[in-house]
Image (cartoon, rainbow, N blue to C red; front, side, top):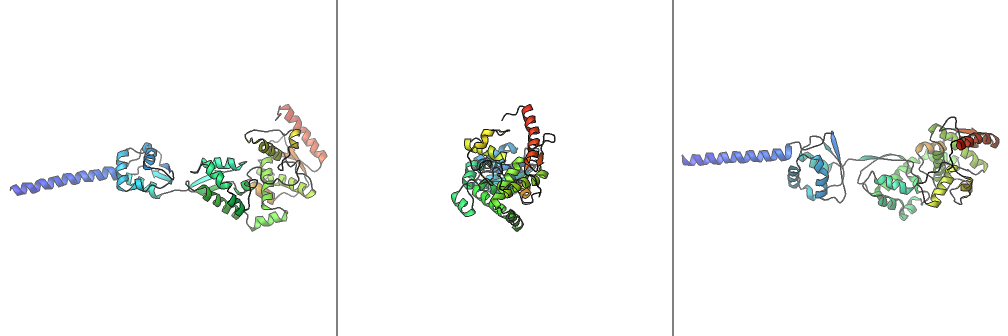
Length: 347
């Protein structure tokens, strides 16, 4: 009888222990442990992150940090942290959360356009990806890369074609740069190369002219006509005389790209810079900004016409008035200058 009581007691203790263990497992592993209301939360874990750093970043997203710690330790996560961009679904339990941040590095979409310098591009990218701006700029200007890829400080910006790209958040600056080179080479397919050759222009000359077109007009439907004007000037031996190149030369010469210049002055036309197309023939030695695809294709598919001049149309803002000769251009220019003076635009 006494022996039976002992067995019953042992059995009861076992049941209690098992129940306690079951509760522990359930509460630590299977109970939802997210504290956010959105359908998902995005988590970014750095390449050299420690468990304490990950825990600190996750804390606002969790209902119970202690149970997360328990499961993380049991699964060996503190010694096996993965960097990247991860997504945690609303209602996930600790086991699912840890699996998500350990194996589910999710690509992100990054965008860039209309940057004037590699410095601007590097800063823009550093706000979207893990590498800092210095890392990006160092990779972009690497001497060996320049030599192997055929770029230099003046031309390198043209390699980065404005678009939306899918990358991993923790992609290195060098890997990103190499990805952009592949995209650049893919862009310059046989059709585009043939069109550039028909214009007697190199790829970089097309990009340099496209950057001017980009700066001259924000209207995509007008870009082929503007491109046609500059191509006509090149064919006839005229200087391009593009105001955006003067603005770039001034900014570059003064090392101040933050200044806003709305009006080019006569004294600016005398700036001695290879980017100043009022003084130097042909296109600049590199793009004065990052041309988008519509501007590049506008050059490659330029409108054929007899226009050699254009000026802003003050009756249809955003567009321009075109002229075939200097007399017609001067009439259009007079209307523009009068409008500028009336509105007090001095610089």
